[in-house]
Length: 81
Image (cartoon, rainbow, N blue to C red; front, side, top):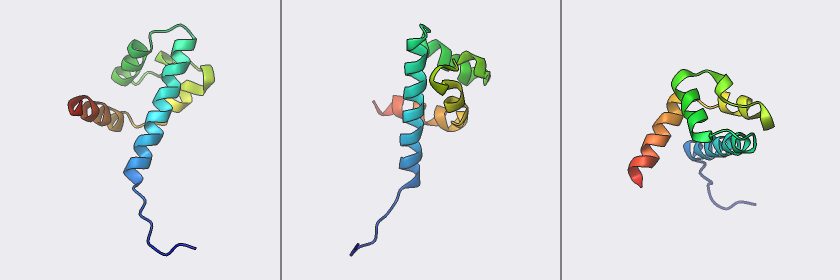
């Protein structure tokens, strides 16, 4: 079926999953009328999940993301643009 070796980059997949989860959390916060940036920053700084709504399972989604890895990716992305 496959004639060549297929390479999988686990880091890229992890970043895609992190972005998808963060996008869902952002959307859920907007739907509930919160300021999503303030709420996400509050969560990142305090690790208090109550900054994130349970709406659309957003709190569970953000708790699955490693905060250190998220901060690294945010800084990397900010500096690249």
